[in-house]
Image 1 (cartoon, rainbow over the protein chains, first blue to last red):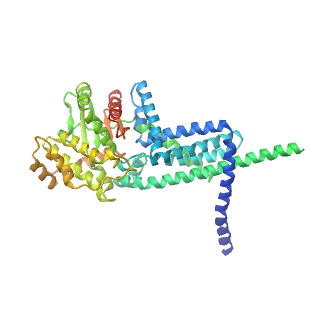
Image 2 (image 1 turned 60 degrees about the vertical axis):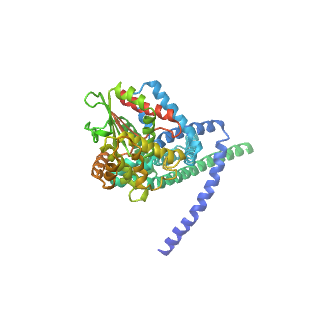
Image 3 (image 1 turned 90 degrees about the horizontal axis):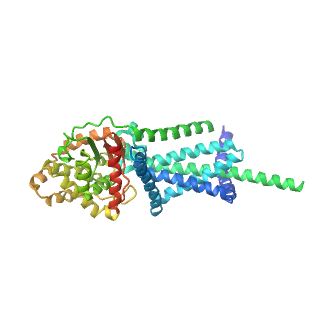
Length: 212
Length: 244
């Protein structure tokens, strides 16, 4: 029993070290990945897409509802333009910068998943896409105006907490955003490590082939 | 474990987009056309072809952006929408932010006090004058300085009751003594409680919440320092109601 406890403790103590090592390899992996312009394009595209969704939800999702309304097409295009302008305003405030950072992390994750899929690492791609999706949803549902109760999280909490849902959404929103960031960091380290291993194996194989 | 993560992810993603689509397309069946307070309405209910309801709280920043846009284009709003489109517009004023945040700090009382004053002004049929003036005062003192504009900005402090009552002194045709007595005695408290409770059953997603005929939406895409921009956004909302 005591031995099992000691083993468990050693595992826990070792874990951060392993994760830190993995993170270092992950950085190398992503440096390799973004040496390729195709993946930079993928990163940019995915980041802009995520920032667009984040900017829409930040305003309580009213533009999303306008897109589903009976407005004429030209006015709906105008709504799309408004949201693009909102994306621009993200760069001028502290909370906006946080959204930009979140969108960039999502973009890096998408580029990593594309790499994994292209290099027959299907299992890793699916697992990390799942974790990344959970992180995205957690980030999305906390956006809006928690003070006014206009977030996607509030109606969900109302089912359990009634009038206390808004206050709860405000507090829970911060916790969920932190969890979303942690999940994204975990996803990026996993993906970066997969890229590193894949690239190292490829390089070793090429070296071996040359020496033969 | 990995299978569980995949299942959670699929459920969350499908649920998230499902909720967005459903919330964007459903109409509120709980929309009763009987006005909650006749003094907070615009247009003729008998001849109206469209019924618009705006659930709001004076201390809610996004509600105020919408209200400021309408106030700044008052004539255009009344002519192009209320008269020409035969719209019956009702502002359903609540103290929802007080109910939501009363356990968190003293400043939540601002919402209750603001509603109390506005309802007492409505009692003398001076609601719109009071409402537009108190919003203009809040804009000048706080919102224009970036205070209380969103959840990240500095909060508006607890305001004295006189902050709200002083606005009424400037309104022609309002009996201030009667108004003051109405506020001090909390004569409108029951009406506010009743309307807020009704509103909270209708809008699970806070304020501002709009029921424009069959079109329902919450939040507002405005900016504090761009009056014309806010009016364009307000028109989009009004037109979305007409188009559905």
